Image 1 (tube, helix red, strand yellow):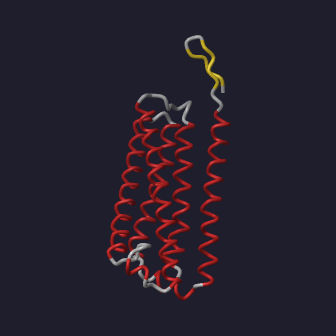
Image 2: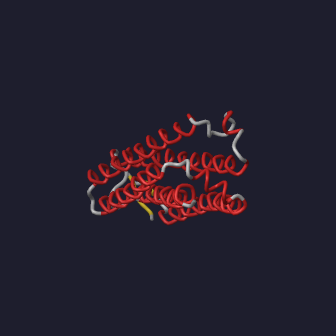
Image 3: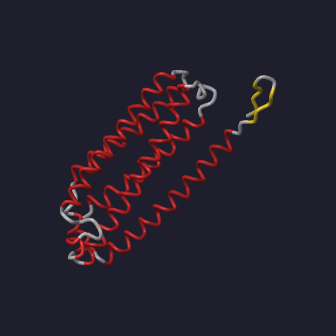
Length: 205
């Protein structure tokens, strides 16, 4: 798309921006897909140990965070619908709600991780070193994969905060909301990754 501003031609290629985001998301899928494959292989080799270790996790915490993230995906989708209908104020409100859900997720994760660390289940701690190899491997993968996901939650939250700032400046409008769409795509990816992490670590015993 070409635009003219104060007599100067400015080129804005929305399709290229979307394709770039999809390519980036593909690399993220490859990253987590590889981790899921590693998890599956080690679980097959240590099925009993993984089942015992999974019993230490709180299904309640995992379920709450799953509901929180699924709901946050809805608010992101509704915000995009709102800007399409030229309702910037509603779009911003929905994105703020999304950030609130992200904060709730991280608070829950903080308390969940704190409980595991308190019980010495974090890699490198004295109690962790006494665990059977299979159980130690489970918690190593648990902290690494959920920690990496938490970093993606933080990155997605920053992305959404940038979108809110652009909405405040009037730079995202009914006619130009690609940045908001890209933020939504990233957030949906973060949610999808968690939907796989939840059953793998919390439900399969």
